[in-house]
Amino acid sequence: MIILVVKLLILVSKKQKLMKIGIIGSGIVGQVLAKAFLAEGNDVMLGTRNTSKEEVVKWKEQNPSAEVGTFDETAAFGELIVLATGGAITEDAITLAGVENFAGKTVIDATNPIAPEPPVNGVLKYFTDINESLMEKIQTLIPQANVVKAFSSVGNALMYKPNLKGQIPTMFICGNNAAAKQQVSNILKDFGWEAEDMGTVEAARAIEPLCILWCIPGLLRNEWMHAFKLLKA
Image (cartoon, rainbow, N blue to C red):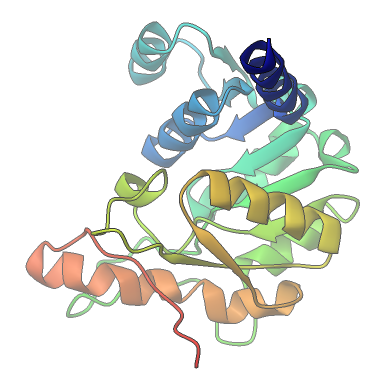
């Protein structure tokens, strides 16, 4: 009897955690995060410009419990929204998704402002400068949303349940809403990460360039299986 009650409590707990997750962007990052949220028991819609695109159709076949929709359908569907587009098209994607569909929601910003230019000695170029960030542009575009920076400083292969010899990596996050950051911190914990809150949206000016640093070993030596860790005394 006790075992049955415990199992029921676990089921209720999991049910309470369920959310509708809208993923804006159907590239590899969007696909990986969509699959991760599915694995955690959430309802997921993968958003794309073209729902008949070959890779999207294939992903849907491999993940039949997920839904696929246009950007506006996906943004309307999601109680929590993830921006997983290429940085250069993110603002356009938000406009297509409908600014009103983001209002009052937590929005995880996994984007980086990577410029369409080749790296120099393994160093990517950004279309922003040191005193601005893409996240700030996004928050300005959707002022009624609670944007939280996350998943921008690691490759897609390590975003969910990273296997790093038993070490728990650090995900640096920032945003203006404390409740939204706590929500994202809880998600990160479920995904196998520890979250480190770096403050308000301006901190994205420091977080976004971590992608440049993370990519250097990969671009120079084809080494991609690493993540950042904040050590404290």
